[in-house]
Length: 256
Ligand code: NAP
Image (tube, rainbow, N blue to C red; front, side, top):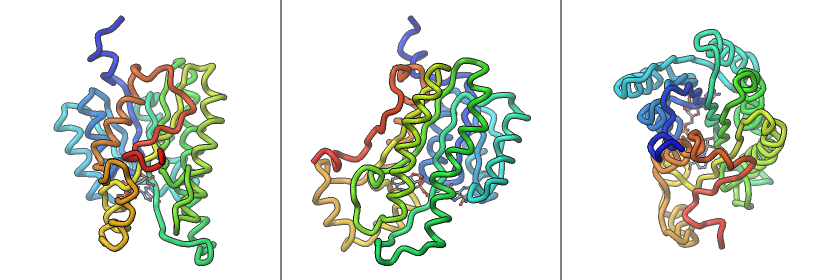
């Protein structure tokens, strides 16, 4: 058996990360590159994607930047097609691009609902559908869907977001069941509040954050690198027996 460094390494693998321009996605690109992967970085923000590319290349790995709007089916199709044309296959798909909204059931806007579902739920299905065939051909692949604790419990003011993440958790189990015969593992990562631009926007007000933290056993929020390290584990062969699971990274919040 390979030694532990090899089991936890992704050397020579090709990883496509959506939402790679900032936050968890940008950190995942850096960590996966650090562990040996070449990266396809997908998002819309040109300047921020250039920073991700520079960080990946500083680790000695290749980085292909694809600007695409994953709220549209056309954007997802083009991103997958460009990645496959350039590199032939993707070994690791990280469906991370997402948007969050603080809207209650009574306030939820139907326009926002469609947009959130398109980015958080439809795009992961589309990307998996387009990239899995090349994984099937090589009999190996990893799909990591970035969900949320909001996908498994009822968080106030998360009506639309919860629908998208709960749907992602359910869809992940179907992906895992259908793709297991091809040696493709599919899991979700369900973080608590993580201090990214999204996390700061929603949680920087102590009046909102402090009552929440009082219910978190570890008593703190998370940092992007903590989620990126979990993504690396799920991308590596060390996690080959894990599929169809929702992996909580929440300081114990959902354990209570
Ligand atoms: P973030 O800082 O807001 O970053 C979101 C990323 O998604 C950006 O790279 C953004 O890129 C990309 N994105 C958004 N809309 C897109 C679109 N239409 N097309 C392409 N890319 C798009 O968010 P984050 O906190 O890193 O969140 C990453 C994931 O973790 C999300 O799925 C989120 O739901 C989940 N999550 C976050 C937290 C948290 O507290 N931060 C907690 C639980 C789960 P561009 O703007 O450049 O397109």
